[in-house]
Length: 208
Image 1 (tube, rainbow, N blue to C red):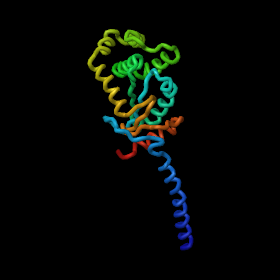
Image 2 (image 1 turned 30 degrees about the horizontal axis):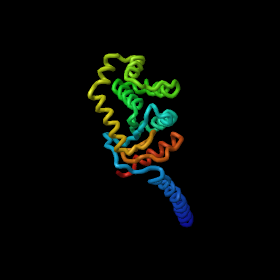
Image 3 (image 1 turned 90 degrees about the horizontal axis):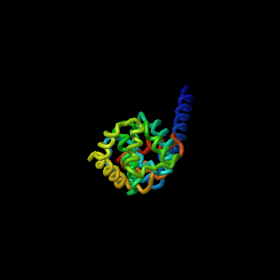
Image 4 (image 1 turned 120 degrees about the horizontal axis):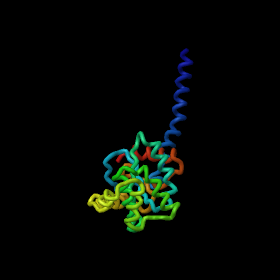
């Protein structure tokens, strides 16, 4: 019996020794400077959070959107998913920022998000004038007068300024870009929802 206990103890010890390299490899699978970089940071009201910097006018953002949507679904019980539209000083991109602001304000983001991408990248019909933006939201069932008021409000101007400030503080050089907890910019984006979700979870648990 004593020999059996000694054998069992040795077997358990050997098992955990085998696990150590696996745990170590898992802990080191993401490398700062390669997979992600730590940035100056943006203030986040809620953590953990993953923020996508994007533009409806960006072709790569359009192609990556299904990946990000699936990843957000995988993380929905653990990590908040937010978006920040980037203007980049271009008229059509700034109008797309306004489109996102209006969608958020009138709580129709889920309804119009895919439609805006489709309009621009499948139909080749980017917003170039404010009246086009207004017509689009009217076609989505919103009241024209309320849209006018929202587009010309101080709140809209403040929102666009906030978008630009976030992009600047997050050191965004291109879109789409993903930032975790306002401090970790993902450099290499895995191309499966599961792998991307794992990286985001890892970064969300790092010490500030």
